[in-house]
Length: 239
Image (cartoon, rainbow, N blue to C red; front, side, top):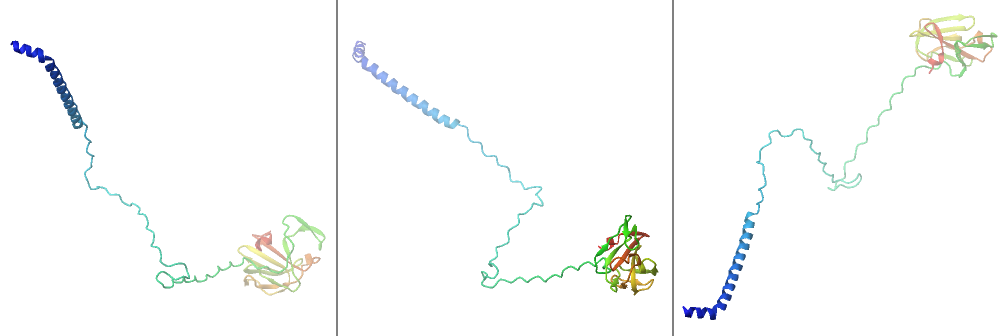
């Protein structure tokens, strides 16, 4: 026992130092082991990525209908512009010129001028005008168309000759009626038609003579138009 105490007194410092070193080594090893386990355990405890949710492949119950389809462009032609040789080496077909179309037929004329002269005096309606021949004021119930004596008087519109007679003021008169409208051609010299005769537009009714009521004026044809028994402006029927 005495020997043990002497040994401890002589070697006690070194034993204590060795014990401290050993304790430090054990502590270091334990600390390293704890850190390693924490690292490993942290990796294991890390949340795993959820697997991607995939829907099962199920056939469509109601497929879409009438879905518009993009038109496909026609294949590019291998031929080049007109007059050049195509890619195959042959001349491109020449287009056939369209057949010329006939111009539309002109509408039939609505009237024929009874004489070729211009209007010398127009229709006055209810307005009074002075008559150089009779020396008074009166209405002018027709129009005066310039024409030389002996010129042909043509039928302005087709119809039926309703009357041929002599008038003391207007000379020889021919009336042509159609659809309730009567044309009175006055001051004729020779008459080429008779009553109840059907005449076409442009037919000759007679020749220009003289109107007694307008003898002071230049040679002309006095034309009147009556609709339902009333005088109307003849110019409206010669348009």
